[in-house]
Image (cartoon, rainbow, N blue to C red; front, side):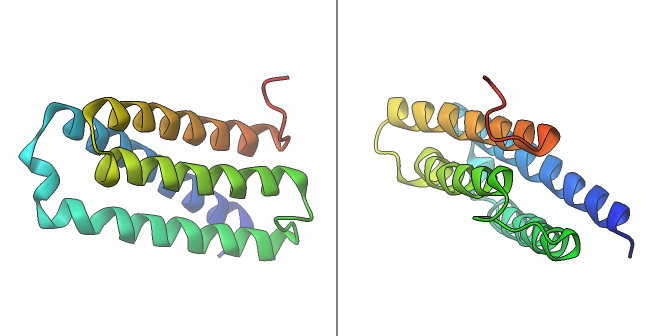
Length: 126
């Protein structure tokens, strides 16, 4: 597999991951029973595992690593925040208001990650 193919695979998994998170968040806000379906609970883990594997492959192939390349460090830190906010939004938030705020924060983190990936710069808004 070429670097370009791996990059496109990674971007595809990122779109799937973000899109599926958005759908699950909307289902959570509407109280949909679809969130309890087995495939809805399993599919995100499969997609996110493939996303992470492709990210590791890209880092090794390009020899750009988090905590060495500032833009990758920003992506990894934003990813950690995205995971925390996403968990609060979809599982751990105790009130609808907390879940909504966490959902919005997770989406903001996701869009920041995408912006950093496109610009290769951690200060995409400044």
